[in-house]
Amino acid sequence: FIEAAQHFSRCLDKKSNWTRARNLLARCFYFVGNTDRAFSELQYVLSNHATEAEEMLDALFLMGAIALDSPRATNSQIEKGIGAWKTYLK
Image 1 (tube, one colour):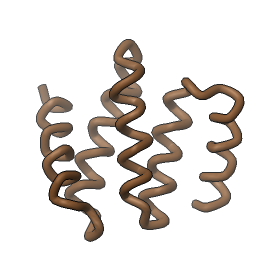
Image 2: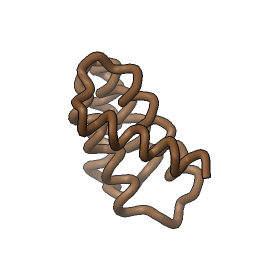
Image 3: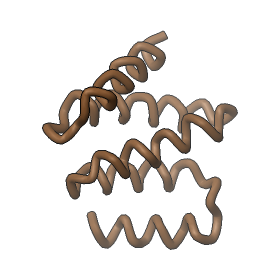
Image 4: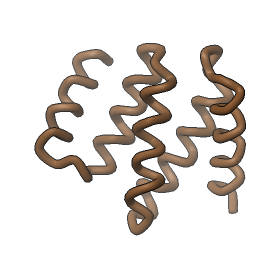
């Protein structure tokens, strides 16, 4: 996951608005135990790319999954995750 995160980071250096790479990078950070950075990447997708429905749904789902699955998730992240899943389900 570390190697994949480095790859996606290099891709984003060239094309910072590539939301698919950000969603995948968020997964990498989650699997190496960095929920803060995973949430940061997902929040970027949710805040800056409202026109890409598939990527938005992916980010919402992943945010909820990370918040509820990660033992490192903060109360704030859990609240955001629950809100993300509610929005995802709508």
